[in-house]
Image (cartoon, rainbow, N blue to C red; front, top):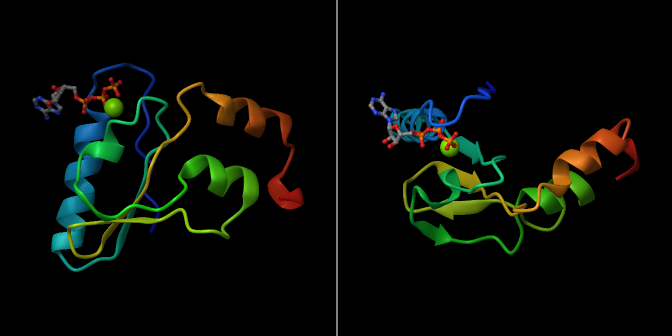
Length: 103
Ligand SMILES: Nc1ncnc2c1ncn2[C@@H]1O[C@H](COP(=O)(O)OP(=O)(O)OP(=O)(O)O)[C@@H](O)[C@H]1O
Ligand SMILES: [Mg+2]
């Protein structure tokens, strides 16, 4: 199941809803992967990390799934791909890449 939480309005509660929903589902026993795609990485710092991956969302999107982009939080079953794109280069990359089959 994929849940996307997005809204253009600032301060609407996106990060709070995402963090709470993720933690709740993990408490229910689901395996949850939070993906922080916000250039201001608030979700990335909501939960203490038990193991921080070397890379975040930029590597995953531009290079593909090899090489470890998933960090483990201290909550069982709750993992995270952190945001590492403060200059918003990913949106340009995606716009210029018709499909991602070449990565
Ligand atoms: N359901 C709620 N009731 C009351 N306050 C809330 C609720 N959800 C979020 N907040 C508060 O509103 C503020 C903004 O929430 P949050 O950071 O989650 O919004 P956001 O949409 O992610 O903002 P941004 O656009 O800046 O990323 C925070 O102070 C948060 O604690
Ligand atoms: Mg937010």
